[in-house]
Image (tube, rainbow, N blue to C red; front, side):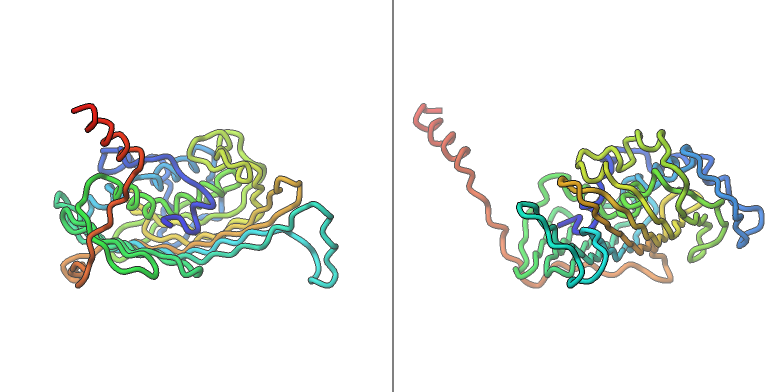
Length: 322
C-alpha cells in the first residue's frame, strides 16, 4: 500500500544504494534571480535543467536523514476514467462486447516522522491511509519493527533486512514521481531565492511547455519509459504548481503539483486523468525537537508463514539423513 496513489503513476529507479550523502548540486541551483522575491517570467527549462531537477528529487531518504530529524508528509489525489461529454442521459450507449471502465478516484495521505540524529540507528514512524479504508502504520525502534494494518492489531518482529529503506525512499520520492510524469511537457521558471523556516531555498514554478522533448522521453527517470502501456500513451494537457528545494543540498522542502492528462485504453477509448500533490518536509531543531517515539502498548508476535515448498524440502532432507 506504499503507493496507494503514486504507484499508479510511476516508479523511479531504485536509488537506495546511493551512498553519497547528497547529490552534487548542479547549474539548476545557480539560476536564482539576482533579486530575491522577484522571479523572472522567462522559462529556463531545457531538457538538461528538467533532468537536473529530477536527479535532485531522486535522492534517497538517507540524504535527508543525514541532515537530521524531520517530518515529511503529503496529501495526494489521483483520478482516472473515460472522457465522455454530457450527463448520463445524453451519453452514448456502450457498444456490445466492449468494456466500460469505471472512474477511479483515490485520496492518499502519508506522514513520516524520522527522529534519529545523523549517524544514529534508525528510528521512525510511517503512517499512510487512503479514502478506501486501507492503510498501514510502521514503527521502527532499534532492531524492532511494529506494524499495524487497517482493521488489525499491532504486530512486532525483529528487523531482518533493509526493506524499510525502500519504504523510506518511497516517501522521499513522492514528489519526484509526479514530476517525472510531467517531465516531457514540463517548463520551469527561473528560480526564486527565498527562505523556508530559516533555510536558504529555491522555488521553481512549473508550467506546461510546448512539444514533448525527445531527450526527456528517452531518459530512465521519466515516466514515458515505464513498461506499463497506459503510461507510455499519456499526453500531458496541463501542469501547474511549484517545487522548493534546499539551496545547499537540493532536498525538496515544499511541493504543490497539479497535472491533467489523457491517454487511450486497450480498446482505443480516450481516457482522462489528473493527479495532485501537496507535500512538505520540515526539520526539527532545539527549539522544536522531534517527538518521543514509543512502541505500541500491545503488540503480538508476527505470525510466521509456512511455505509448503520449504517444508517439503525439510522433510525430504530429514528422510535422507541430512
